[in-house]
Amino acid sequence: MRELLLGGGTGLVLGMAVQRMGLTCRERLRQTAALRDRQTLRVLLMSLGLSTLLASLLMWLAVIDVDELQVVPLHSGTVLGGLIFGAVVGWTGQTPGSAAAGVGGDRFFEGVCGAAGCLAGAALLPAVQGVFTPLRSLLPESGLTWFRVTLDKPYLFAGGFLGQGCVGFLLLTLSLCIRRERPVSAPTEKPAPPPPVSDHPEDVREDTVIATLPGEEPVVVDMAEEPAESENDPVLGESSVAEPESTPIVEEPSAAEPELPSAENAGEAEESLSFAEKNAPQDEPPQAAEPSASLEDPLPSGPETPSPTPGAGSIPPQKKQQFKPSAKKASGKKKKAKKAASP
Amino acid sequence: MAHDTFRPASPWLLPLALAAAMTAAGRLDLLAAYTLAGNRFQGALLVMLPVGAFLSSLPGRLRRHGRPRLRSTWQGCAVCFAGGVFLMLAAGLAEMGDGLALTGLAQGNVSAWAFAAIVWAAALCAARLKARWRRHA
Image 1 (tube, rainbow over the protein chains, first blue to last red):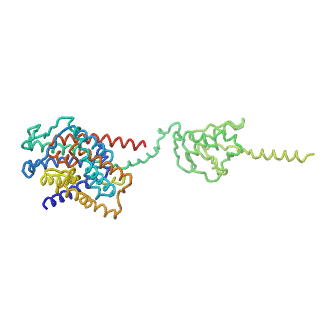
Image 2: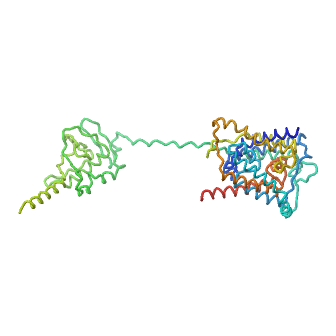
Image 3: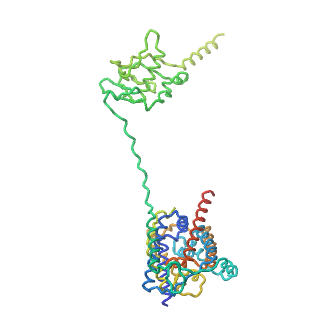
């Protein structure tokens, strides 16, 4: 009765230990064996270190009877069996103890099948003893302990229980050296730095356009960040001239309220100047775009846009240039109609 | 994975269990328990092992309102059954299982240390091979 109670209590505590360490999960055990799960490895090593320390203390206090300790001999079967055991543990992620504990875990049916497999394997053991016996005799047997913890078994070092305790302390220290896995926080996105704003005239560069509107303060627009937009703009680019459907209309500045200049408009104004220069008549000398020229006529992308009245330092009014390829088509239709009408 | 939020804890439970086993019976022998060799201590230990695991998993089950965290699959069941058979055969060949290895480590057996080192090396290779096979499959 005493054996049953002690065995049941020990099994209860052992089951709780296996579950709390997460070893009932096959994937976690596999990751721990592959040295990928640091947390479980740390807890396992800590348990081993504490076990060794506690066992050494209890053996020294004579609570554990050293005569009942079983020293299993080291032979070739230990090596071969260890290889097969380890391969199966690494592949399936279970041990005989974790398989039994898995019956009480989340995966009930897998735990039952694992325990059933262990029972089946244990039932086959008497049948295969004839094969195992010659495999165990390949290497000489030796039942050794590291330190002198038994009265009659051979040992390697004369440290006794203190030496064994030091081994446990080393395992504990090794477990504390394994860093805990801390949750990785998402990197905070740094906001883009605001564009530099300066009132000093020394900060004006060559690629800077200063736009002034009547009654408003000058606005500095840095054109260096947007070099290619104006070139590909279908309204302002030369390729748009050949397109029949596009209507890049450049109108004279009017008295309507002007649009606030923006970077695009500044680029458009520059291109409009160059385009106006190209298409301006001979008697009118082209006016070079001054850096301080005001952008009173921002060229729109749409058909109708109001333009401001010309003021001091403003861009001179530009000729109306309308491309109406549809007019050509209309004239062609008229010609055809005339031809059809004539006998 | 579903168990990413799980944190292993309570490293002091295993030493208590091992100390109790070594005090009461001198060793933790699951191999003898599975062979039903008539050892009452090891047999009671094997029977109460899943009960202890279930009691420890109760707080998590109550938090999840009874929903299982992981589910069994028939492939997993087949793998577990086959794995169990080979595990016991290997333990019989080595005359040492995981329970005997743990108590042997605690008391300083050279064979237990050699068995644990060989098992860990083989498990490391097998686990990494399986991970690579899964990635390429």
